[in-house]
Each structure stands twice: as C-alpha cells, then as structure tokens.
Image (cartoon, rainbow over all chains, first blue to last red; front, side, top):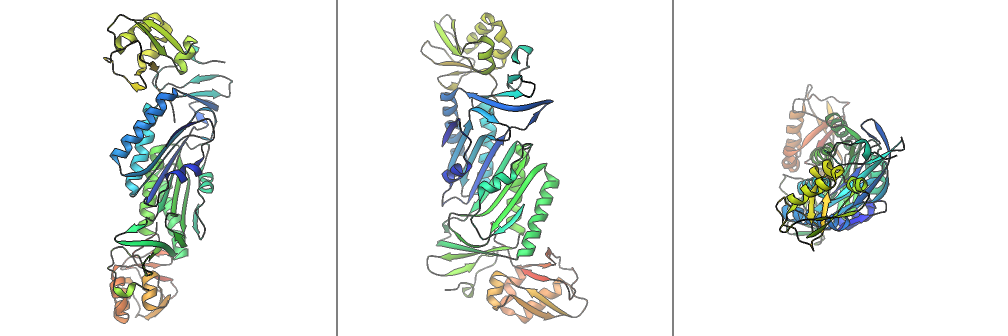
Amino acid sequence: MIELTQSTIDTSKILKEVASSDAGATVLFLGTTRRTTDHLVTELLTYTAYEPMAREQMARLEDQARRRWPLQNCVLVHRLGEVAIGEASVAVAVSSGHRRAAFEAASWLIDILKETVPVWKREHWNTGQAAWVHPGVERSSGDVTP
Amino acid sequence: MIELTQSTIDTSKILKEVASSDAGATVLFLGTTRRTTDHLVTELLTYTAYEPMAREQMARLEDQARRRWPLQNCVLVHRLGEVAIGEASVAVAVSSGHRRAAFEAASWLIDILKETVPVWKREHWNTGQAAWVHPGVERSSGDVTP
Amino acid sequence: MKIRVKLFAAAQETIGRDEITVELEEPANIAQLRLRLSQEYPKLAPLVSKSMFAIDNQYAQEDSPLSENAEVACIPPVSGG
Amino acid sequence: MKIRVKLFAAAQETIGRDEITVELEEPANIAQLRLRLSQEYPKLAPLVSKSMFAIDNQYAQEDSPLSENAEVACIPPVSGG
C-alpha cells in the first residue's frame, strides 16, 4: 500500500494492513525530524511532493522490494503539508516469514525512498525564517525567506 | 522498558513509549507465530517464562544495546499465557537519532532475546495434541500430550 | 518545440512559478534542456546543476529524448523522510 | 549440600514437578549437578544434556560453583519470540 497523506500517520492502521497469519515478522520504521538541525531550532516542517511521480516511484520501490525479499505485505506512507516536530513524516512497514528479510527490506526501502521519492521538506525555524532542504545544494541567502 | 504481559501487545503504547523529540528513527519489530510449522497446523500457543530471570535478562540486553548503539529509548515486551495465531508474541522497539543504529539494535535485540531469554512456547495443534518447543532437542513421544 | 517543465520546492520559489516553458530545437534531450534552463534562468543554474529530471513520472537520463507531449519535471535533490 | 533446581517447560512436564532437590558433596559446580540430575532422573537426561543452568537469575558456566542458598534453575533450550 502506498499513501501520501495530510493526516497524522496512523500506525495501528498500518500494522493492521501489514499483518498476515503467514508472516512471522513485522518491521515498522518511523522517521521523525529532530528538533535541532545544525545550530538552528526547527519548529515546524512542511512537506511537498510531485504527487503523481511520488506515488509511482513508491510503487516501483515496493515492487523492487517484493522481487528481492519474500514479503507478505508492504506499506509506504509519507506525510505532506505541515508536520510538527516529533511527529512521524514517513512510515515503512513490511511483513515476512523471515525476520532477516523484514529488517533488510524495511531498511532498504527507507534508504531508497529518501534518495529517490520526489518529496521535499521545508524547515521553519524559531527565527521566523524558513527554507527548502536540498541535500548537497549550498543555500544562498535568497533561499531563506522571512 | 521491560514487560512480560498476559495481555495483547499494545503497539500504540509501545510507540508512544519510545517516541522522543531527539530521535529521528523508530524501529518496531513484532514477532508472530505462523499458522503452519512443519506439517502440523498450530492453532494456539502458550508461553511460559522463568519470570524473574527473564526480566533480568531482558534488562541486561537493553543495557548492552544501549552501550553498543546511541539509543534514545528501548522497549522489550514478551507475552505469556495463551497467544492466538497471528497475534504478536514479542515486540522490540527502539528509537535513535540514526536509523542505521535503530535497525541494527532492533535486529540484534530480537536475535539475542530469542536465544537467551528464558521463555518457552507450547504449540497446540489441530490434532488436539500439544508439546513444548525446545530447539535442538529431539521430541520423544512422551513429550507430546493429548 | 516547446517543453513545459514543472518546478518544485526551491526551484519553484526562486522563479515564483510552478511551471516554465522553454523552446528547444528538435531533437532535444535532457542535457540540452538542462543547459537551456541554466542560460535562460541564471538564478536557477546552481539548483539545476544538482537536479534530476523526470519524463512522465520516471527519472530520465541525460540522453533521454524529449517530446512536446511529455510531462517534464525538474527534481531538485529530494529531502523526504 | 542440598541443591534445589527449578524446572520449566518439558523438564517440568517430564518430572511432574516445578522443582527437584539433589544432594551434592561440597564443593560442587554446574557440571556435577548436570551429571547427578541425569543419573537420578534418566528421563530428564536428553533435555538436561542440552540445557543451560542459571544461578541467581544469571546463566552459569560448567565450572560455576554452587551453594545451598543460591537459586538454581535448569534452562532447557528457549523458544520465546
């Protein structure tokens, strides 16, 4: 299951979705942004996506994971819009008959999702300023908006 | 947090327990017994423990994991008594600033928990028979009770 | 041919629009689009040099050919998760 | 000295009791306890040969010394999770 959502990530629903009586192991990963990044205090995040491509890319990653590991079920969820610090912005859940496969697949999925799914984070700091996060791109003063 | 419980594992409570605004990553593992083991159909499980030692051993494993990885929080829960097929019998949850650490710690914890915590599973089959599970010990006919 | 390019995040913010159109001579590929964008929108150049491009919701290569009907997007380094 | 040994799972089921007492000459260690248990309770021998022992809630070694006050447990191969 692939989901882009404006709402709080519902972990109970996700765990219900991946549960399977043939699966011995379920692994859930939740990614949360920490309060402090560098020396600025992040107060709020907003996420935006190239939605149709993000959905397609997430579905491709699920397919690839299913080809690589014997998975029963797989759920990928990313939040869009405002996300408070401490709330999960992303969830990956997989179930498998084998716990090694479940750990490896979940770990691979979050790595590749963060590298390839077209979603962008905007950090809003306690200074009142905000900027988009583009790893590897130097921020110019014009990128920080009041 | 270490828990041995007769009740259903409450994943929402566990995730709340491990949440931390300093943790970027949370990994939850749930272990469920599959319907089929070998050629017998397992209908129900009962778990028993050497409770004081199981608690102490789980606490030692948490300590070891915290020394080895930079964890924010750690929860280990094992069910005792009757557990229906498809319900989780064990949960491991950790939070960390780094997802690699969270995955490695959760994976290590479930491996070592299954190897060293004095908990035993009894399988109840659709034949009406039941037997304790002791990996590596050949089952004699006397171990299977009607 | 006219190629419409979707913009996101800092690219969208820099230009103030979520889509721009550039004129390219046929046949054209992603490398040529990348060059043209940097020339026509110098403020976008640093970000464009680090961006991927997508054609019809899939990541494209530098030599992937462009056509007028394709949905083209500039994908600056992503930061989901 | 008298050593009381806690039994669990199939060991408990085989003997029908959750604790047994064996008499050992001082000084005695886990290896000697293991041997005595197998001799006095032949039905337990196959399981005892694969079991660990714990003293005061910690896994013990074969040469760990026993004392009358210690809480001793036979830990057959575990199957939690």
